[in-house]
Image (cartoon, one colour):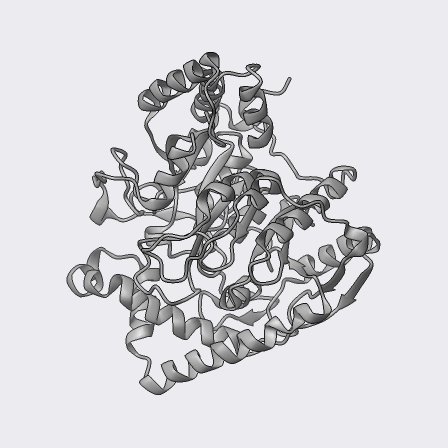
Length: 480
């Protein structure tokens, strides 16, 4: 029997609106699942259950009165521990903020709460979000993959991915610089979108005129991500790249006919490191669904300099965000923060100028891909989840990685482009762990990319080898 916490967000919201499921019932189901499973995976690192219960009671009364209900009315929400939450501890994964309780919600959280979402807890992240392979920090420790607790869940939105896979909440927030929405979504068998830069505004980015870092939704389906994005998106004066958009396009995703699409596929862009096993899985999956498209062709978009551009711009970003902490509290910062700041400090003006100019050249060249194709599809990640204790990927297929972002070339290269990228599950890989695809769409084509992802999810659902995997929670449950 399906528990309320296992419902999709769209279905749960439909049942709430039809008075067939109360927000209180849904919340209690989510709380019970957290209590049963979270001790084994450590995805949720703080909760505000009593406040959430009070808000759920109010939401239930509004349903019974017949009030007009906002789009996320009564849906429990997990918030990544990088997002400020009023009255709820926000550590950023750092001992420097172990007891930090913000006085106000940041813009993203405020929008979601105004739309009826009920914040239930905070989801784990590496220290200041710096960590793509595993989610671990000195405040909360390791977050474990729900499909195999000995393995990593990806980062930096790893807690959100695991919480969704386990049914702890139907919606979670995430953020992404080099793949921090896409990697944990792939490793946990859920869905996420890295939106077009500026679609989801943020008042907290230190460097406002860059497409380097974005915030976005994580959920269990593309439809759920669209529902959440309809609330998150839209102009705000605090973000210089934000823009106006008709959010109804996300709430009611366009019907995309796969048989009319021209699709480019690339396993590695022609240069990115990808495990041999992942390559084989990608080829096998492609053989199962390529015929669904009007045209499906191999096309490597190039981007050979993207890794060096990304590493340079990442260093600048880390200096802007963390130099003062590095100067005054270096001994209390983890190795990923220190490494990135010091790499940035060592860069010359000539290197930085080259990276900015080359970034622009890559962007212009890449956008021409969409003159010939509607979508670009790649593997969701280049590796299968490693051991949970392995913080960074140092080698792929015997090749040493240049730095800890080298192994994320498939996602970080597309970060530089700024295009919407949707990660969707596509069965299990050769080791029995979740496998996924990365679907890149045209600039500001977020609704179209989500609509295509939704169509693929429906196609995959009919094939047991391609359908979204669900973890066996039996061994994770705590019985009181």
